[in-house]
Image 1 (tube, helix red, strand yellow):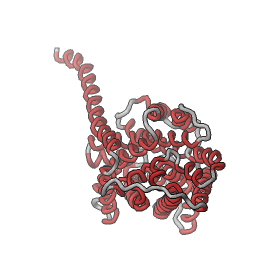
Image 2 (cartoon, rainbow, N blue to C red):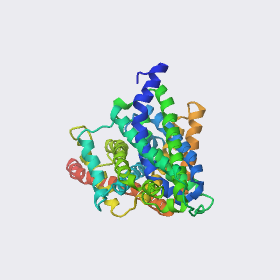
Image 3 (tube, rainbow, N blue to C red):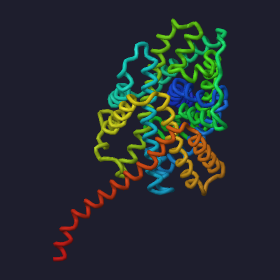
Image 4 (cartoon, rainbow, N blue to C red):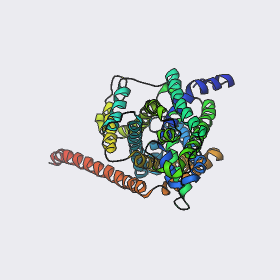
Length: 427
């Protein structure tokens, strides 16, 4: 965090900060979020993009302040636990962890769909592959990050050009699902802006940035992600129409077929699946940060403290990947996206609420930003599809109960072990 002068700040933003997050953001939102968002808001979906971006910006600012005060490892959870209490802390941890596991499920399912020859168990194997690569020490940084970002941009460029070059056939449009359609679509598209914590609260020392770098990098990556997402959304909607897009399992490939470019689908599909690999690794990193904080607080088994050759806690990673792999057998990627987005919106609502308390003695703007982020997160979460809200509610209720039961059992065992010694002393 030594970059202070203008030129060095700009070069750090371009060289390190942008590829670190932008590839993961684009790989998540554009490949996964279009169809479920359009199924909610129809042709009004582009208006949801800035709402999702604003929500992400508020959450990013909250996490950067929390990382400064609590350290980068599980900063959001630690702040919620400290400022709001143990139960809200467990809710924040549970929704954060399950949201990231659902995100692993969604990305793995989408990547399997885009492969030229998808197999039934491909999606289930991808989270485990991500753990293997992470444990082996794979880190997509620097030049590798730019190469993966270039691959993603090339895929999106080919699809966008093909969609706009051919006059589409007439396609029906779907009507928005009620007055909360835009906020519901924004909730889904919020999934595409996740990954900002790689900038604001990175556990890796090499990926920590100065305040000056963050001030420039955060708006850059969020605005770029929003712009690309909006352009691709308009292009694919132009070619498929909102009704066909809402039902498409692989929108970019279906748009190429509709644009008389079916010959490109194999290459584009393989490139798209490869472009989603950094997303899997980024989601795993984010889940690991909260998991490490839970281990430190004694909320997770001590087994998770064990680390592999690259220093990653492989038991925790394997447990997360195993749950995600199991969910791929029961959930479609679109369902997993909605569940992940809803859980993480609840998580960041609590993170913003805790940040507001943390910043009570500071400047007014960060405090008001946290208030805005809390309100937006709640509104977007309450506008999500009912199944996603039901799963999120189950996580909100069950995780604190499970934590309390485990604590009571632990204290009960301690009391039983101590009782004979106490009786001996009395005698």
